[in-house]
Picture 1 (cartoon, rainbow, N blue to C red):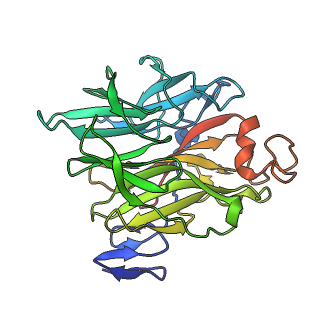
Picture 2: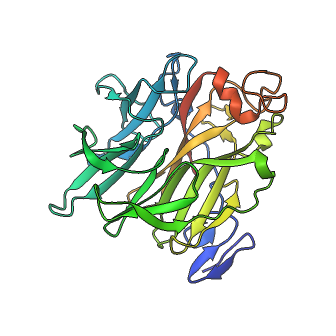
Length: 331
């Protein structure tokens, strides 16, 4: 096994300044993405979407659960759009499935085996409630006892237990089953981030790789950055060999995506990241929320959502058309 990028091998795992890819430390590098991935929801609809989880059905169909907001708003989704596609990059079809009722800003999804029957259970996590169903089309039912603590959940099912972190990404909680109490499993100690009080992490996505290493990626941002947005902070990565001792590294993914129609775009911000894995557990795609309008130039001269007299790169979204994109990973 070989670690690259100044990494060192400890306890049989790579600990370094990039996420793991197999036995080598590597960045979540992008590769040319089908143009259908530019906007997974209908770009002609003036309403905003802001990314949701993508789940693979047993028949190979891809299902996305994407919050939709009123025109000009990114607060309080009116419903969850349910789209399906034959390819993970789309195009997605939205008319044949009914909307799900709104129940939270940032839904997450976990498929896990029923401990009694062994059949897969499909669970949608949002707004502090966990809704369960027999398949990706539901129907999803809500039980009062199926709850969790914190917003923007990032749950995983591992060896018969549920683990999750939430918006602040400062601890991991564990539960022995749905409806069972949540207890603290680990603290995630934050370092002194570059940029100090200007630097923030949010929107976690957590997973455990094939080698039993734990990972979290986040949207990250500095609200003092408003020019050259393509070079601004956009992401963060946490990793652990055991789920209890966590390490932080910056910028696992960046801003610019190339498409197979010959175009490219540098997004001011890429938020609420979700990762997609193939049947072998290999990372293949990153889907995120994105500002669909402004690019590297940013919007620093705007007065709304400004900090210290300038609107930072990650805040351009509030006045632009916001949407959901997917990016192919070079793995």
